[in-house]
Image (cartoon, rainbow, N blue to C red):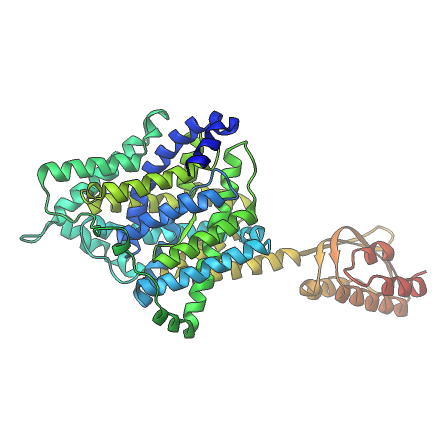
Length: 520
């Protein structure tokens, strides 16, 4: 270790970047700390599991990462999934599912499939994030008032009025109003802190909210819930056992394995792309990042921690703080490890209401009005995809929401690809001109046939295809049949057959031979 440190210190690149990386790592550590704790609590997992995921995401994944400035850790976007898995299979089941999901991610990276995880409709992604935001905010409002959340997201949303009543009109010996006060103070601190100048905001708003809540709660000695940590790191983790392998006979477990792998990878790739846009340094290597994420999630599964992704909140804080290399991410993991190892008692002074307030704020931020406006500018169908995804995520679950949104997106894509527009014009000399635009596929065949068959027989019919970008074999056969009818009626049909054949996919030569016989 000493020789490694010596070589690093003698490296001119390291010597020029380490001061900025060191300072950035402190900022990222302060951003990550409350989120690691809050996301674990929101998932129904022990707080230590979130911290361990942050440590592995920093030290291990930071060292292997293909995106040098991305920071990995537990993600708010997986809260709903993880909570459902823990409810059904406990922490041991989560560990097994996560371990195999990580293996799939690493395998996808080795097979160079990293870019494919970006092939998800932006409307589906935004709808998914908004749905997750609704679920997080809906669940954490209860925690912010020291009320135990309901068993599912929709029930949490419907029971918010009852929880608010408990905070406003507490029963005898109840302390919900004190927790509500700490939560509201924390929300107010976050909101006001984010309005301050950029230089001041290098100290994260979430950390200031935690400090404010912690100081007030300790000064007044409020009888509310606080973070509970075990005596050491290992005792706070539930490791998978050989007996938990029997869960692999449950088909639903394999669905969860695939779901975690796909959703975590998609979130990571989106974060990687965003980080690349935020800085002008080296570009990310997507497949290498996939392998790093796979290794990290496999380790998290082995030690019973939470799943991780590349996280845009921490990554953007890293970039804005001036980080230059992956050492900032690694060092932030070191600081998390040092805090858990030597100062765990400090974390036990934090009210859970403050952490819940941070996640309520985070959840609401995931519901991006500006994203909906951008989708509306693209097209109304994109907003439909967004709402279908959001409603299904909230009303059912994340997987079904993403599937439903993707199905609508595919239907919209098929419609777009088969969108054929046609216009007929009767000329002064009695001839007819038909202008085709778009894509003529088997899906648009009825529309094409209807348009052409309504043209009068026995005349000169000219079909213009300049604005036609695709023409498949089924439409070609229909057009040849129509030409035959025109010949029998004494009319003529004119079209640039060679140009039309060039638009055909696959075996064009067979039609070229036919054209040389029939159309000259």
